[in-house]
Image (cartoon, rainbow, N blue to C red; front, side, top):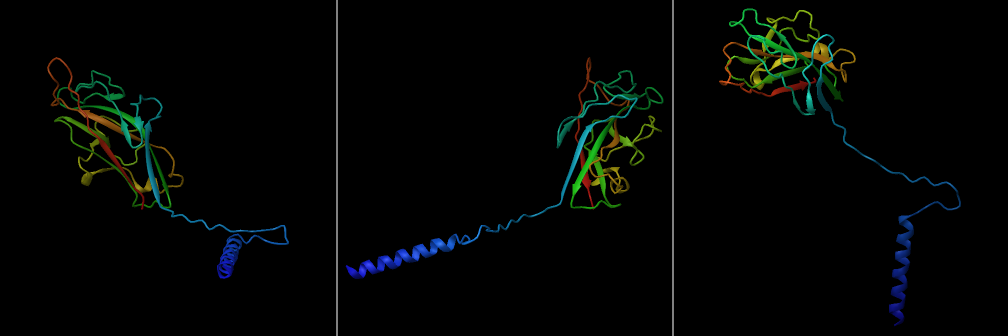
Length: 217
């Protein structure tokens, strides 16, 4: 019985010692400074927001939805430019032979962190092909941000696959001072040729998805 009592006392002493060691505190002072080590993993990040354009003097097709899925509706259109659509229209050069072009401005706001944009940076876009005679287009001049010079003939069709995407913002614009987080105005159009067909007695709805890709290098 005596031997068991001694072992029990030794066990209690060891437990008390461990308890005190886990919380040392500071004796005979009013200052104590524990430390906490924190850690994290920092990664590079990119983001691209789309929004409705703000160019003065023209109508704006609204950009609806939230990042990353947006929508835009050009309204009712035709190859002669009779319908005004929801935005703006350039009448065909020769009615019945050349297309009408319905267009709007919109804004792209690039954002990045941990990266430095260079001349190799870009924002590209492509859209799956629509029906015959209908195409999604952008101005032929890269980084064009005003309506100056825009006519029915100053548009090019977007690439129709990711491997043939069209540049809409170049590295020159992205690497400029203040480009990070600044809204950039760009233009988008729907070209409607006389070869585009409509259902008898009504309209034919068409749609495609424009995919933007921002690369910061």
